[in-house]
Image (cartoon, rainbow over all chains, first blue to last red; front, side, top):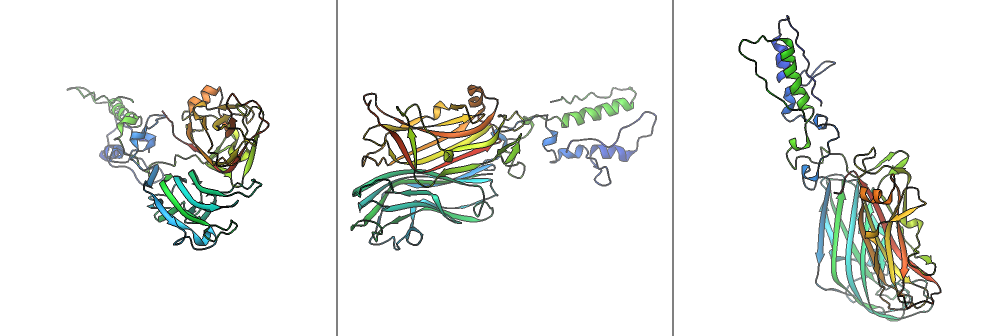
Length: 225
Length: 229
């Protein structure tokens, strides 16, 4: 609080020792008009004690106090064979979290917003007709986010049925949340990019996908307080 | 900062109320006018500071983080030639509702806006024309006149697996600063958008229709009580 001393002295008036001590180190903490004393220099100074329009630079702030981030990644090839995984005929029941794209973190404070961003280089092996062969999707603690989705084949305006072999793709994406189950503190959270390969050939041609190879990947979470 | 000068009482000097009160006042004034460097570095923690993400209304503008995007395929058509005449989408445009002054030294205390953009390009160009998808960030103070942030302009050549299958992924990360507002000649900021274009080689002249189909996109703007220097 701004320092305003309680007592002003007058000539020809006997000084009360209590008045002097209240100015120096004994604040008047009670009553309708409490005053601080010079005692506020013992850890009680705040923004009102700084000169007007003071702007603090970043070095005044302890690291990770107004923004905070974690990252995971991997550079090795990870092959997900459809003969062994991706059970289920849709993403919700058949997807798998991908190594290097999954993170568990602890939020030290309640942020205003959280940004997830990721980069994936992947290779899809197999044959597919004109429909989604594989789907990658961001999965949050509160559920699946539909917008943050990459379908390997989803050119829905292509008129002719076509067969594409050995598709490659790069997916750089981000998603921001400002409310919901992720905007809390003192909890552990697990977030990941999940993959589902259409092993059953639902909506596809006779030959379903064979495998999905994730070559390089990174996933990061950034909390902005 | 007001200097606190210690003027000692001299031997034989009469101690007056003015002398006593004046010294107290000098110390009080000094302690109420501290400079920023009087504080140790890395002192402030989250309990001392409000959020630096802006979430408030100022002069009629709703200044808050916004996440928009395209969930289902959307076509953006361009004229001839496609570039530099790009196209925009309301799904990739953020309107704060009213212009607000920009800078930490203004009433809004908004000194930066973080912009993130990612998009899958399903295909580019209706006919078989090789070319590149171009995108950039633009700002406006009235949602009518838009000024590009030229440093954000990027182009990417699609990978043609099929005539109409671009399979391209484009991204942008940038921060709108006070310099951008000043360079544009704006009094403040009201809107931010992504503009997409389709560039073709000079040798290609017979372009019938230029079109970019955005398969899915995510566009986020985060206004900050912070200044980029």
